[in-house]
Length: 322
Image (cartoon, rainbow, N blue to C red; front, top):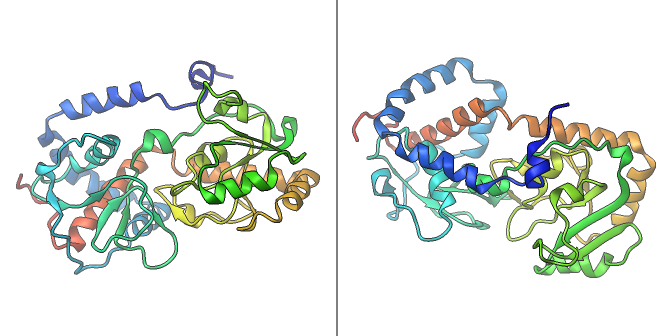
């Protein structure tokens, strides 16, 4: 077994320093080199695109031809590093760099919980309703897309649900008030390493069940939980990101509890007693996560999502101008 440096040195967290080093070298690369490579990449994608990749492209970008951009749309060449939440700029520029800098787009940084009135790139969107104007890109990926290796078998973990949060939002606080002190739960208000009851990601992995309640939008911890040998516990998600949470199947990829949390105890007891069912969820979740771990496919899907965006908004994504 190879050494797990991410676990040993960084407690299974993504390291922002490494992220910014990659950003630095990418930003220093002349833009014409990206555009020179684009035609080859898109042509290759048309030949080799898997059914799953095609599904993802059309799931993340549901726009149809003829939609109009907002007056707030800008040309790529006018895009500047903002003072706050800069990761949205760097993550979007990673793929915008491949296209003509004359092309126009709109991006809405932050936790988006409403559908924009015009086509825009977002990190998150509501699952329900007509969400086509919210075009998903993998934004704020260093924080949200954290996959880990877990060498502890489910059978060796504690028969408890663990949760660490400030439980600040009303729905999260309701869960805390309902189950704080419950014999099947280990819930504490702690998010910083300086907090008394703080647990690192690595320390969470000694528990069979990990709470994954949505916050302002999606549950940030869901992705690393699903890559582990523990099981995410949550109601049906209301929001989704590049991870396409809207495609997750209840009691197949995660343990699904009611919106009012009333069946939590019954669900935990069931999966503690039915170890085969619990093991199946871990296997299914791990399999789902692996679909997002091929970097070449991630790049290809991202470029095709952008290409479709430019086409349906009446622009030529293969223009050499700019």
